[in-house]
Length: 497
Image: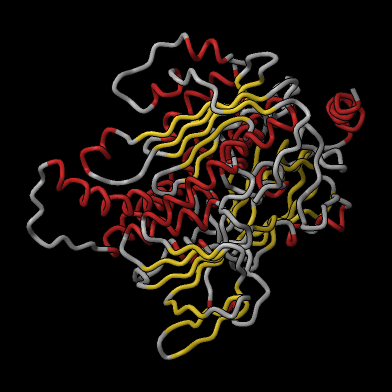
């Protein structure tokens, strides 16, 4: 009720609107996926929209960015291209047992793949600009900051400052990778630089165990590098289902990645032989490249938020209500800069709902339940809904866990010793499927369909009566009949490792 009241105050304050005259109905600061979506959809509702973004460059900085943002230029898209490149080595090994006679030496041309990647993100940067232009959105290249509740200043690359007024201002500036505070940190790189290396490093130390760390470890190992993965917890991918985290760890080791759990980096030292990496246990590793993948921080520092009173939390994330509105009624924020759920499709959802709320006369709250996600390690992990640990805390009754572990048909012929693992978590009281996870080939493609089922509140009985596609891995999700374990209501889940 309070949120609806806040919306009404801004949208129906006719006396203020009649007096004020603005250059734009909406000005968006940040041309990533969420900002572009909000700008386009708002324009489609008839709003006059402006948007600013830093000039394009593959590596972000205070002076460079690009329309398309992190996901398109230095995130999801280029990473997935490299993931594809990194899988072919294993596929070629497997091919021999399928009858392919690979008698000649096979070389990998990193520079060719790098150029293909760069060409693709450059193309997509242009696509995003054309989408905005086609929607009637006016674009500006430069650094944007807020100079008043309804005022924006854009500093262009040549230093020229442009000032505009807007009825609504939307912040969609995303986040940026951070360096840990250790001696020698300047010798390491972040994921931005990792996507543009001139040569493949022969020896790599990856610090971290989230999406980015695990994915780059898989990419480089797939291309033949010696890879060490160093992380603080006992298992990688904190926040995911613990059982599936253990599966990923086993698979990473099986692919030849050396794991260093319960470990931190203490210091980096430049030597003639490369970078000496010293851990907090006194262990020494030698590397050509050290990747820091230990977290990202919201891009909010250069926005002048303090001057206009926009509230942020202790890490700089902009505080918003359930409609993505800040404490200043004319200023809104979406995407990673708010640090809610930092996924590109979520930013797109928030951008869509912002446009619906402010210009479509359809107040809409983003729904963060049952959002599927994937980690593109090799093989990939994908999940939707609650983990087993989360379900134990939230379920109305006992929790039923169904699992299936098997050799994919491809592996039975190739000889690769790597099982696919699937899991369903069910509320025994309602028979509702609360969560699903899979680690194995094609997991993200399969999980997208499972996500629809969970969004529709599917029950285990409905899964059981669904006819499977045979032979496929996906059919295992509708043939798991026996309960692996039953956790009584009121049980305290184990501490996340």
